[in-house]
Length: 308
Image (cartoon, rainbow, N blue to C red; front, side, top):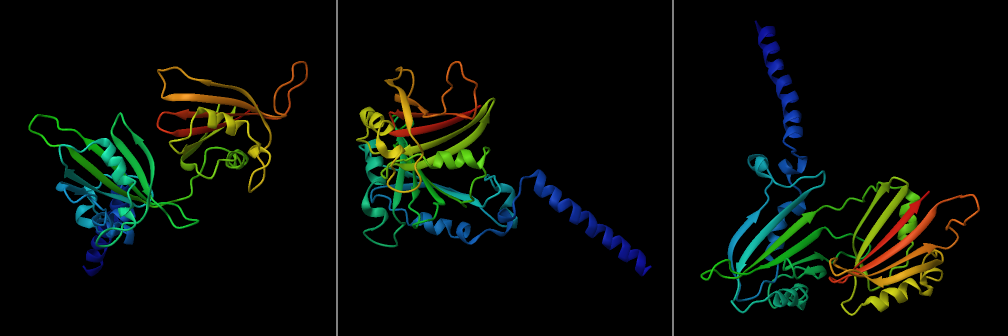
């Protein structure tokens, strides 16, 4: 009888052991949904240090949760720990999108008038059409940022409504990306001599039907214009960088303004010297080309294509 009960108990344990990982897979539950992490547990406290303006009134707060009772409520997906705290504030009728940008660029983030400082932030971009700004916490030297801020200004939807500002703080643990291109293509793209005052905000690489492409997006100063983009493409940094190995000489084919239907306002294209195909000669090696575009949001995208 004792062996029978033991067998029954072990069967129940086995069913649970098989059910639990299956349920986690089907429901996309990660270990950190259940156990949390030090950063996720401290995220509400970090959000409380955001230096909101004195006349803002918080009307709503929403946050991701961790722990066994809350794991089914999670909306965050991905293999790395991540979470958010989103706070909505009622603001004065006179508040504008320009005020939102000025607030994000203010000194209060690093040196608040009172209380604990959130820390310095870097504004990635502000989009006038969506009235939204994206920023990130400035990481220590040599490290990657893991805290991101999205602030959006919302006008009243009715005559009786109030304008709002929605501030969302997101934590996402940094993990070095695994690019879908060869290491050589990544190294070539990283050798492109971006000026010191450009700040990279995004990168991606992918295979094409005839080769590989790698894109890098940079936030550039508002004073940076089409003539500056062209001067950089035709400048000496490609063969004589201030640091690191040179990318190599390029031959600029064309720089021109683009159509009004696109957000891109200026574009330059170039071939890497020595990789062009010569008519009448057999082809050998890769064809490398570089394209740089500047858009109205002061974002420069640099694309490296390696075909053949």
